[in-house]
Image 1 (spheres, helix red, strand yellow):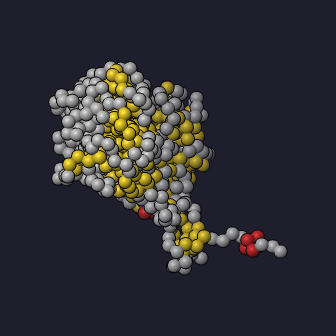
Image 2 (cartoon, rainbow, N blue to C red):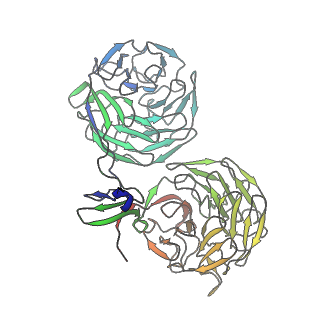
Image 3 (tube, rainbow, N blue to C red):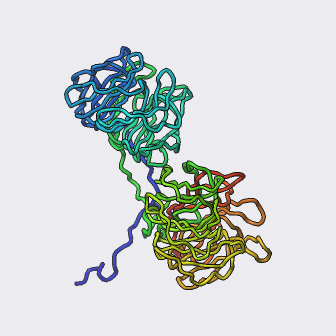
Length: 608
């Protein structure tokens, strides 16, 4: 006999409620074994079940060291130099303790081998209340107090400390975590209490999203992209607040059972340990263990079909582009407009290059999803060129610079720029598209009149192909080769300098005019492809600059949520679902960045 599923197919999942876009990070603290010595301003390393706590105040400065086995603490050999407010890095069996206050501020560094401490080379700058993270052989000591706040950062190589790039904001009593190449520091005081967060990429610090609750005397557990910050003091109270960092923003998730500051930390963002500390009642030996709470709700999945038995409807989970929004992101290091970009890159990993600071710029900046890093410059500074490609393979061509050459073409391999075959027709205000440095398209521009020229690059040379139907410049486009979309621009019709609403699609052979933009403009940004795209910002005929954003569904444009700030001569990368808009011009060149995110939504399926 045939089975029912063979005849009718598989059943659709039945749910009593709609799926949700995000259950949110949640967690809880529970009691662990108390330390033997109550204290605060101590340091620690390790995991939730193998932790090491050392130093601190009782209120005397002590060198007491204790080991935690997941349930109880055992006293072991003390630090050689008793101190509090010290930095730490490493593991349960291979730890590093550095700096602190004895008093006065100390530069002493000690290593732990699992049973005893040994003094090694000192910090270059004696200090306390600094952030510390890394391993016993590769660590960072960042900022702190040395008779005043210092921005000094030092890197440890296993035998000596070397000064490296300073933090942006000198402060003390911070939390931190990570490695010598990817770290994070947050909170503290300047002396004003702050929620400021800075991320470290191995060569520079970048300011990013603040904590939700500004505080000092807090600690952290985790890594660069996934860390929790817990405890601390605001301007008015000791708190037990715990916030989770996902690589771009902080979310409040849980509180200590007993509020306190200046605790010892260990563990990860999902399994953490907080021990000892102080609060309004005094110094405590309390230990609490943190664990992330697994989600219980049914989370949305793109393309998911289900039946809601409460509302008696079939539903599908799809990306809700009309429901998308722009939100502020970390600013670039250099304010500029008329830049190029790796337009085909995802929103989590892109390149902005060249532009106008003024004067013309050669700077290249890389985006990793939370911070910008300056890297190798173009060989020739210029602005208003065309670009295409991805994070590790792109081209930047045409444009204008200090010299007369407007045909220049440079290729990016992920670390440096190389001059390659020039355009056949040099011009400025060109636009481009492409999937890599060996597959690029350049279209439009001015030299000095408006151009309809289109050229295609194969990795070594450019070949002229069929022109656009309408000559124009500053006409943003996106896509790959052979399929590319171009929209807007500035042209000669109906009079010279007219903003355009025209949209054209290139199929690898010729351009076809399709539906116009709702709002004519030029000098905006466009991301996506010939089937789904997003265009934003620019210079319309009626106002100086626009915040207008429009979505292309393959046949028509629909207005969606505006940029927060009206911006012209901007650029970006990503897709219609998730995009970055970087830099541009408002009343001057700006470094501001906004991120577009289209959420998932449950849509009722209707028969038609």
